[in-house]
Length: 442
Image (tube, rainbow, N blue to C red):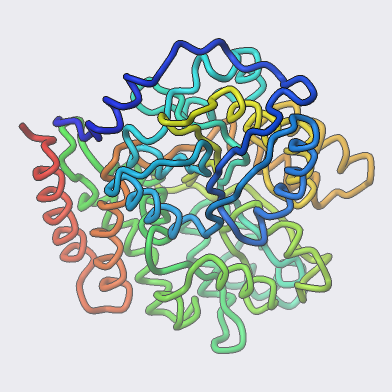
């Protein structure tokens, strides 16, 4: 495969780079007068962490200049514009394991910059997922994987339980397979007042969901030569799961245009029986101020596909240091501060899953001590899945481009414009042409 790189950035970083001793916690006033320029992800789930920044400024004497604060899709576009313009005038940037491979030359290898004993605090699988081409390009902030939230009011309703057992000959319980999930979704649905489940039907949201369903059915996106293989029988079965639910009315009609917020708000409205979703929604779903089903939310492991594998598409939000940073030690100290035990506990209390093992354990112990069985169940379920079952999309620069070629075809199949096989064949043809152009077959 032909490597893509940014010659000007790599050359410049080589000229200005120096061998760095691993950063150690800064002494008081260690960076007096220095201004650290950063670009951070914005949004309600991410902002609370930034309230700690004044504490780091006070400790080190440095000032933090947040020159950009946007949702990650906009930040991704901005990074690419920075690369094209050869204007990298900042030190720290928010990153994500799914997107990091797209920026070769922008961010530096953190091995040797961040101490090995600090890195050892993090879940090994998450560190592995943060590594691209042997380079640790990011320190994970918190991790995402989707598990099954369900409405206990629906699952515990005596009339619904009796009707389910009469129809299917088994007791009603959260589904353990995706075939069973489809069966239950259709059983529960009474549109337009109530739906069995829902899904986000556009952008990386649907291509990622398709990818994890494909894996759960024993399929893969690519073969060893990077030829697309997702138009296999396993891929058709995965896509048919979405097509069938949409056609049957078991999901809302707007699903093909839903994004993550639509799912969260939909489940919190009490109009959906179960929802495969991220841990960050946990506290929102159980808060009476935001959710009509507060106190009635259950959590269960994601179901398994036909290959006996659970879905487990995952990723981690993270922080990186640019290759052209003028003060890597200050940048590393800042990142260590924002990914410290105390910082990750601040996010854990809001339902975000820490990437540090010590913070995972402490958060679970804290919820148990408070007799908060719901959040304790959330942490046990999500943390176990991240440890044992998580997987990322292919960590290649072309993943997002491939996703953007795949999801419109998935959407066409879902709404009935194409058969699942035709949609996947068309997507595979486009992805193969893109990968060929990228030099993978030369």
